[in-house]
Length: 364
Ligand code: SF4
Image 1 (cartoon, rainbow, N blue to C red):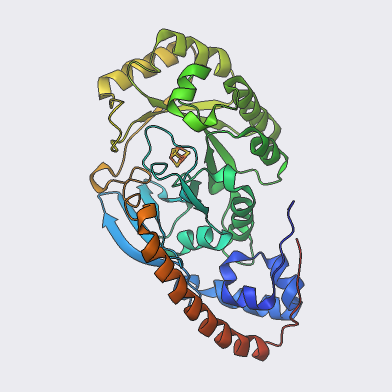
Image 2 (cartoon, rainbow, N blue to C red; image 1 turned 90 degrees about the vertical axis):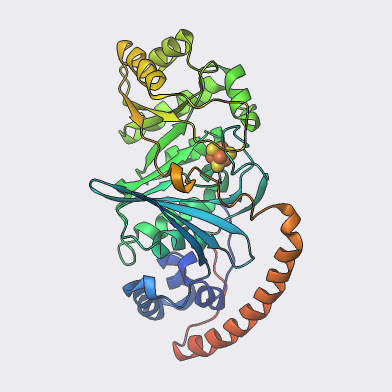
């Protein structure tokens, strides 16, 4: 990893889901690391080291949505979707989001903070379902929280712990270029989805107003480059907005970019939020656009919109809870958490003495 982290045994014992095995081992020593890591992941769902709290679960026919409260009082949401062959968990990576896509409620209050690796990993562990796929597609832009997201993947896939298959992990991104290039160099072989939603700069700037500094052509090139380098099919998510990105020129441009490439186009239907400026396409409009894309040689799937009844579109539920006007409540939580943390550290100090770790700082 590119940045230096400094942490102690106390940090690990206080929040054990946030560290890789190598970090355990560097700080605690091989034997203590192996014991503690084994303990943590032998029955993680029963863990006493939980730092996120399930606040609400909304249950739909094939979709459950969880609201988790973080230790500083902010809320995030995590969605589980049942498929024929298992269950996918869609995890959040930020509180709020700086990208501000016009169709998404997560960006309504702007960016509040990044989630830690532990908060990301815990979403996978503490949903009720047993999951066999993870998509980084909830609140927040995962590649703008790059280091924590990559670290969470290392933790999730460690065979000594959760042993989650890399093949079952997908990052969905709007395509910040530097991070896309960095991801290309990782030896992770995860799946990649690009939220494209437009075929020219003007429309993309309108739909994703905070991505203006990245040229759409460069983003497409970078994603195709990822696909080639890792020999992976990439998915292009395209939210159909009637009158905005459903013209014949859009069909032609998509054909030009993606025909004969290892690409699947996922056609999405907008889920209603508070934003009034765009209309949800009906089924006929989606099918007609799909047929046009098929005619120019593209492989297309219409992605069924699930969970509409429980407002499972990203950010719909918690955007109200995280309003900045709730700051006073947030400050109160922070001070009560501080005293909780002090007590907790006192307890874990006793435990750490028992396990006889050598307390020293580590870097990665
Ligand atoms: Fe952020 Fe994703 Fe919502 Fe866009 S769609 S505002 S990137 S969470």
